[in-house]
Image (cartoon, rainbow, N blue to C red; front, side, top):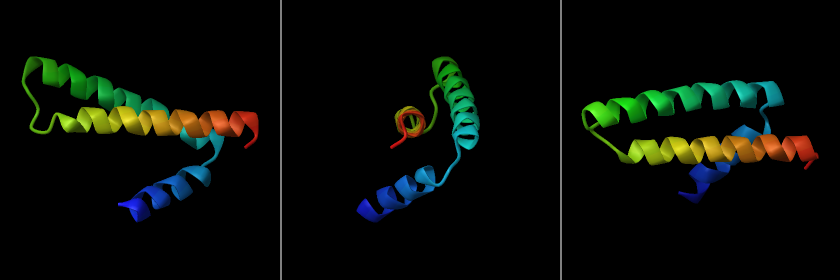
Length: 70
């Protein structure tokens, strides 16, 4: 599990600011669509909504780190 998180962190740190913004927009759109479809008919794996929210949070954190110069 720890190795998986490390590879995600390395992937995010190698992304440019524009790539991160594009990925945030795409992931946010997927989250909205998934939430809407879950409201109409329950989706098979509702934990995927939580996973997408956390992914967006990771991306926004990395974006903020780049803004601050860390």
